[in-house]
Length: 212
Image 1 (cartoon, rainbow, N blue to C red):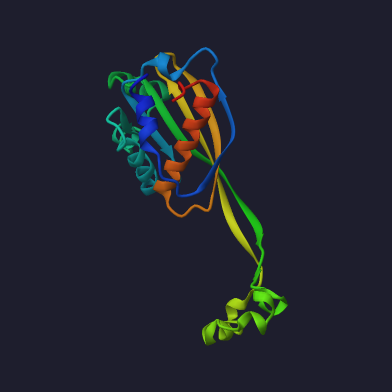
Image 2 (image 1 turned 30 degrees about the vertical axis):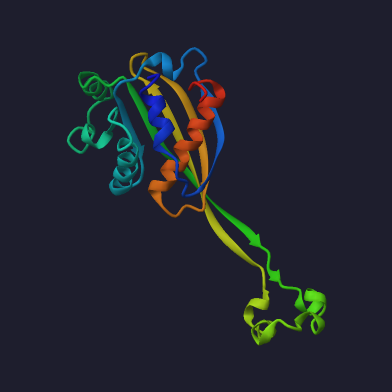
């Protein structure tokens, strides 16, 4: 997939809807993505509900024709099949690679956001009186507004740990896996973008993908 999966990864995930970083990763030292020459890759998002699954898979599949959503092939009609039977479906459909994305865990984090103080009462603008000459009533009156002092506060955020795997069906083995941490998540689609962008960077770093 020297020009297939690589080019897809380069162009598909540019926006960033969350703060995402790599936690850990592993690669098979004997296999690179380019060597596998993937032409048809199944995308599997193992999420808790069907709507989220489809949103994530559609986001990736829309980037390039080589990606196919798993719900088209593995759905309610055949989920009870054995592992070998599922693999046979994929082999019959000429899939040579699989990318999976799985929510591993969520973590609550509490951070302190410090307050702000304009400093006008403490020498700002060369002192409260001298500094206000020539600034007009709006500036003077603004000193008494709530924005003059904004106290600090604590905020709770949720961090999402997501595992991304790349499998070779030809070799029937895992060739790359990595876990990412995403914070300040507001949009599932943009978070998928951010995760894959982080994955691409790490795969280039460890040699799984060729550098730019």
